[in-house]
Length: 262
Image (cartoon, rainbow, N blue to C red; front, side, top):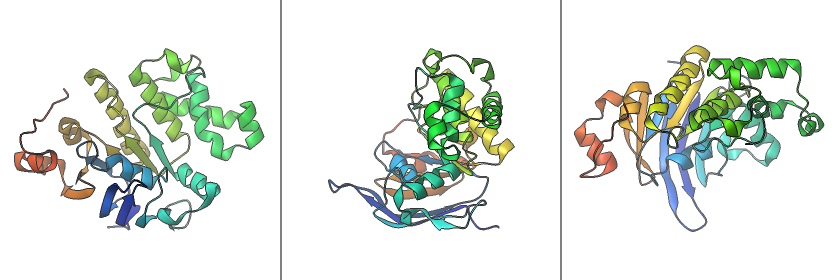
């Protein structure tokens, strides 16, 4: 087996108010995996992804990233805006609430993913190369929404906006895509559409995906491997098919009922 693309070692995150969101957790992610992280709200799932993308600074531990584009680095030790901005060209992220610019066009929102490779003046003026525009349209086509390129983002449905957010992240040409509760704001009928496109990104582009989810029915359909968190610690690591009723109760608590998304 090749070296993992990510190695998280003894990662801890303590907030200023004393809350310890991550407690000495360690795991590895292989190139090309679709890894899903599950657990109750407050278990540390979002904190974990935000530490990997350095939206939050870890308190201690290592996050070793074996980039194909550059030398390996410890994400936890990065300092300064330039280093962190460079990291985010390799590790993209999509969020529960899309984070689009509502009054901008769909195409303009996707082009925001190219800001790190565009000069400051050109980005302020909204001047992007023909190559950048072609790339943006390519990713909009990949997520099945290229016909909406010229309309405003706030005219789209929630599921369509999340697909734009995926295309924007892909415009960075990342090696890893983090998805923090990407379907939590969507109705059940739309969940599978968004998850299908994440699966397509993973399988057709070979991009490693790390995704936080609540619903085990989605986990079983899309994940190649699962990590379950509880109170800031990893309590399960393995195949989704091996999460039986006993494990479900250990992860979510005695008396918890599984909700299915059809």
